[in-house]
Length: 255
Image 1 (cartoon, rainbow, N blue to C red):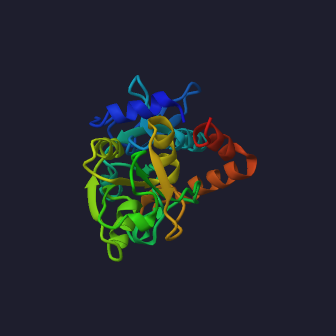
Image 2 (cartoon, rainbow, N blue to C red):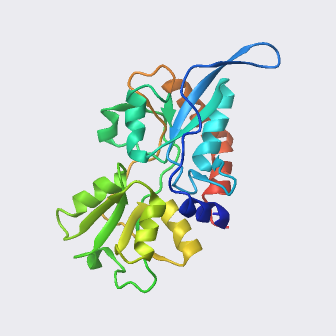
């Protein structure tokens, strides 16, 4: 992961909306109408989505969404919001789909439809380098930070049923990292790929969650959306032709 992207994500916590939702038609060079499609994301989750030093939203999910929508003939617009508001935005028709490192859980499937999965990470607990917490056995009595509305929040609450932990929720991952560095929490529970980036760039420590497997990431759509299948078809084709692997090497593999 590139350091400037991650540090930019820590610095930028409160972010405005980039575009208004709507089915706006744009004329192409040959005069054909090109329909705008609006994507929701939470740009605080490097390397999947974050802001660079110029404030532009970049990352694995962003580039994937651009490639898929271009293939399908859409003009892509992006709305940046808190992660826990993304499903509500789909249900309110303020965005057409979501690409935001979202795991396709059975619980979420009750509210939205998902495309084909495009990535699977797993989870990790991030701690300070000198922390005495080095494994899940050491978590008893710890304060654990999670991002609101994520699969990690669900996992931490489930863990709290068997292990004495205090779960703290915040809207943005950079806020959680700052809480950890300030020693107001003992660990942050994150997607593995995201966790490894922070560990590498900020000199933190981490250990894997060995408790259970998690579903893969997918794009989310309103229930009974007519465009899910066409998005899934492009994603599956990108798996076959190597384009998805290229994106993974660019954004998700360590340099």
